[in-house]
Image 1 (cartoon, rainbow, N blue to C red):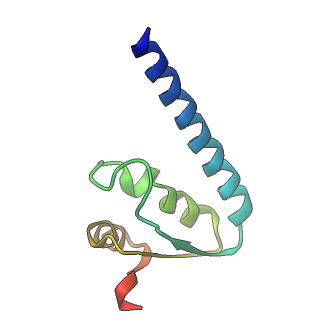
Image 2 (cartoon, rainbow, N blue to C red):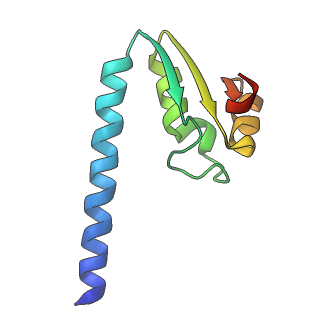
Length: 92
């Protein structure tokens, strides 16, 4: 019974994240966007699909311009290698 509850809670959590992403993409479409905390998204920065399925990648695809900042240097480096306009927080 406990395992079922955990799986159900995970399902609900992912559903909420999906809705948040859809709403965000609708709001930023064709607008200039500053993405604070741009590396904190699903999938993980270590996931091979990060540059195509991460939230910043999705925002950059629909926004007129998307600039990201974050304190997580590994994520910033990976996004920069993918051609995204991002900067580490401490260098601003």
